[in-house]
Image (cartoon, rainbow, N blue to C red; front, side):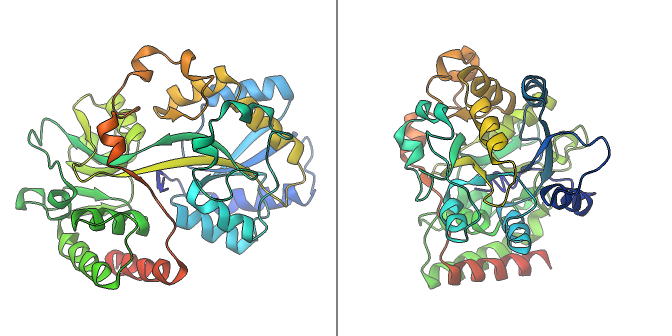
Length: 359
């Protein structure tokens, strides 16, 4: 998902083109004096523990270099332009793996390449078509509303109230810039599945989003620093991934999080190896490293998300493993659903609606 998450999450596009050019140069074997042995990872911003990256380099001599993307859609557009070349690994939302397989962007990935996948239960390996055999699930979570508890002591507890806000929330909302998530929130507010594609419902969701637009301060994702609009109080509510709400809470303890009553989505983020990479064995080594139970636990705790690695779970700090935002109670899980990638025709329609909102 986004994660635009999925987490769209956060992005720093400055220097992106330069980073991509360097990645392509490296993938083509254009050596630079003193060049280190390295892997190029296409990843969400701030979605790696720097301490783990350093430990991996110390153990293997391989430097991890990251190119960041803002949403699932911007990552897909970048990979389409490059045919998946220029990178060694991608972080990809589970629902997009099968499409990548069909485009021949991914190298096979299974127990032969990454033995620690045996620590990942079938529920995650079979969560989406194509994951088993081509992707290594790594983290999972849900999606909801972060809010300033001091400014909004009575926050909206439903998607309907969030999507049809009261006058006091004018210009106080931050909303995802991922079309699937925007439409999904509207669909839930209308009483449908996140993955509902009936044309009359799409039109009703479009009207709801357009009516909500005057209340939106920005379409995007809150930054993770002291200048974040949620921290400064310029924004009061934001659609975010669950672990990201806790990262924001680390900056300001007045930030809370709600999964709305209608339910939400479950997402799974995966690591995949690029078919065009000339460093596939090093890429497999990184995934194997990150799925060592101690490392999987450390990554999950650093990012405030749930690990898919069952051998890592006993190593989690109790306050992490028992946190209801990170590991939602059964009542939340039963009313949540896995997000799906819309059919091409619907995907184009969703993007048209997003463009209208941004213009």
